Length: 222
Image (spheres, one colour):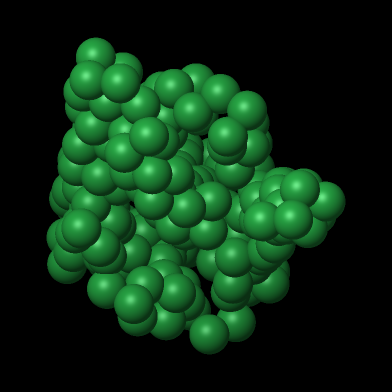
């Protein structure tokens, strides 16, 4: 059985800054930094194109945080719920037709799981934690310069942010698609297993399910 590296949890923790971590519910907990404060502020005055670029830089950075957090949650959840193991066990006890169906579901889940992990952990074309935060901050500052004091700083900041947004959009879209693929495969696995797997993918739900299964085993003498 192919598995992800046992260092998965360590790697996932390293995918965010030391001050950031996946909360128990899968949300990314982030302290408010200077970049965060600027991105939450209203855009400075400027041309329609510059204001659109300012918003794009903020939005793609937020999307990276959201989608990487979602990918980490999904990737860990598949392992913590032991869905691959449950599908393999169920296939071993099923008749030929059902076994073939369960094996196909398992193969789909494993492929999606590994792909999501690969997309999450590969080298990114932009900062995987801050996204376009720094180019956005530089552009924001340049837009707020007093009239008549610009010495080309705005043009340079504009160019840098445009380049970052273009690269970041491609990177985050790959994570979005991988997340959707994994979520669909996970849902198919839960459906195929029926009452043998928890409906949710939160760590707390998985632990409760395992405790219930253990109690059933003790009651049945297994």
